Length: 79
Length: 229
Image (cartoon, rainbow over all chains, first blue to last red; front, side, top):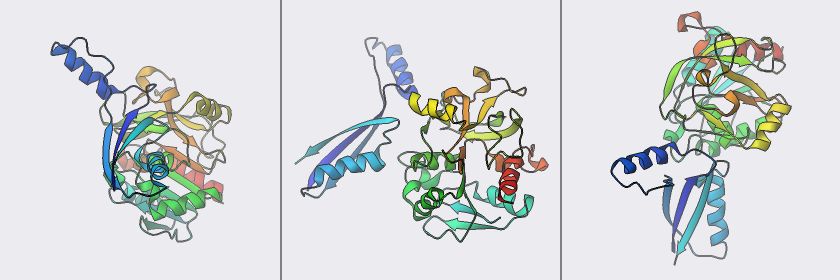
């Protein structure tokens, strides 16, 4: 079994209103150097080992976990 | 003309759509259970509003893979009529029956109010009883109704007249203040390339009876009947 971590964020071309509001709040708290706050989703899962493992993880991201029309994703596989 | 209304866990406008077809239009209608791949021989599938599967992951993302939606995708591919309202529109985009996606409203809030829509193409199965430019008063109720797509898709939608409805004011004029959610190009509803699938965020089924404050959404259902006859 391998542990997989998937990170999903809105494409940079789309306004991440949540990120913008949180960035404003951080500035208010005095952290004025903070920029580019983006809020996304994080998915953890374990998958079985096999020759198709990486192909299948990419498929899962494309088909369900992310919507490639509006979101970018990346994943890490931890042995 | 026989209609089917899909019931997902979390649908909440299925009864409104059912009522509109049965009591307002006087047409036969059946509920289609999300777990069944059987469309019961209907002529038009309505994908209703609500929060299918709790809107988990993304609105419409899980519903896309339900047996009823797999069957609906085959139905649409063979020319079957499909009407997606609100969450139904989100499901149709996730299912790739319509291009683009619906994201959180610019204002970050759930918006529930009457809006005005301009009929941009009156020559489709969904708009045949309307005239070009006709303004309809229909309510919206959504938190994620901002339509987005890339430039190539937008150009294709405009060239092929696939934007059937745009947000406007009472006189049919478009401005920032008449767009309730920040939708690209004021888009409220789009059709598939063959015009047999329509997705829209406003709720015509909630504007089909004068007792509901507006009966102007009824024209969309009457257009379907006219097309079918």
